Length: 291
Image 1 (cartoon, rainbow, N blue to C red):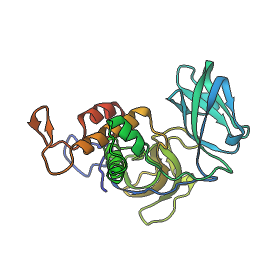
Image 2 (image 1 turned 90 degrees about the horizontal axis):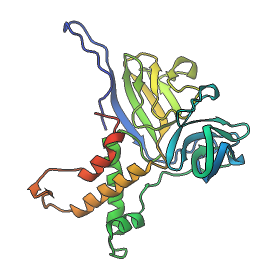
Image 3 (image 1 turned 135 degrees about the vertical axis):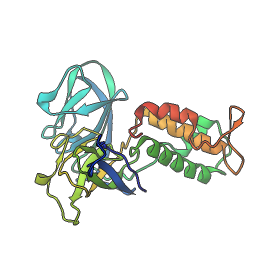
Image 4 (image 1 turned 90 degrees about the vertical axis):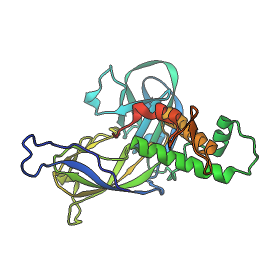
């Protein structure tokens, strides 16, 4: 798959070679991406300004949601009470929120820690959930077809958004001539390797991400080196996507289910070449990261 995006510089005089940033190639490996001790999901209830759980000791938090609202991890001295932020102490397994939580709320944490088991990427929508959503009662006759449609719908939503919904390893070839290019198909979890144009490993002291040293920035930039060809391999994915994305996958799966075969798509009485559900597009529009 080839995607071109990024920041372009225009030369107003039309002279000389103009540097630009671009994503020239992206490849996916949708396999178990266990990092360190593996990946796990913790569902619990939080209250007050802090939350502690021994399962988090020595670990790394990838994503955190309070009552379904995503919070961003920052350094301890960067907390701003006006933002949905938290900082994490892996020594004690304690999460400190940017403000006090008066009433108990549901907390969901996607994390990696010693002793946890690797979680293979799974589709965020099950066959049973889709059949309930679409009010389909066909027994198990169409389960295989529906399974394939769910995968296709999720991939179409990923392509439209420019994100990784499931957990995967992403290998991206970048032109970072201007510096600061955003890593494609995140949310970012962890870096596997960075290679220069000769295929040589660039160690951690010689490249800089905008979130280096701070977990929780889901869509980081490669600040340096400035180079025409850099190959990055990293783990990415929501694991547990926001509810709006899950709704869009259900909408897109229903669209594929209703428009099978070679019959033309009829939308509002007019034959149309539509590959994405208008409802799914409307649901995803505010989350889209690519033009």
